[in-house]
Image 1 (cartoon, rainbow, N blue to C red):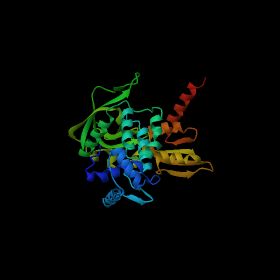
Image 2: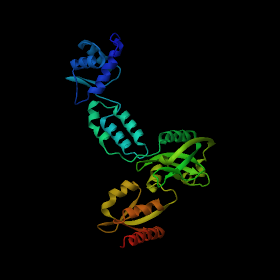
Image 3: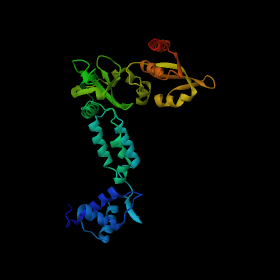
Length: 328
């Protein structure tokens, strides 16, 4: 309950009311503020005090509109920004259901009661797939610290079994040089190096448990083949669309002209287009060969791989295998 004699608290209480009850479409009058102060905080106040405290808040830097009614014009987050953040949490596959709900509740607290009504659908949506790994947030913190301090990490890497539970892929922990964390297709990945090799590997963070920062320093980047050639994160992500590790190759394929939107979505703008005819284009780009195989199968009705020959034969074999399975 509000301590009625503590007048220094009054401007903060008025600010809370402006945050909770107002926006550009919902201004309130001084009388309404007086009534809310009494109802919510048992605080007595007159119009003069409300006016003086709002002036004081404006002097403190708060953007408060005063005219026919008043409202808080600027917030930590705009409604559209909050909605985007909430949707990104809601559809994240890295967080457990409990973690996602807790984070969404925190984000909702930045909005007023009218924003809450606009996102009420969040609690009514059917349960989406979230990670079973309760250590994801801890893993993210540990990996972030290790990257900043340039230290190696150890972790248990897991995969799902037939019981739909995570099980270690091997008994001994992975020891990895961590360099970068990225989000791709709704999941977090660690980009790192396994000491035995000189290339980059990708690890699903929601599949990691018991992540520990070690005292040993990471391998210098100059010893990693991809870094030594001049590394670019956007380029790396465009070439590793499914986050498979390994070499990238130059790929040429014929595509329907009307899937250029999809090409940009998947590969960015770092590819070359040559016209074939009115409806077809010849596309040249660089991509991880294994990832390109699965992408080609996904868009098989719209593209035809021409080069490299090894990739064309791999896709051809996969299509033949599928055709046999569906022959009867």
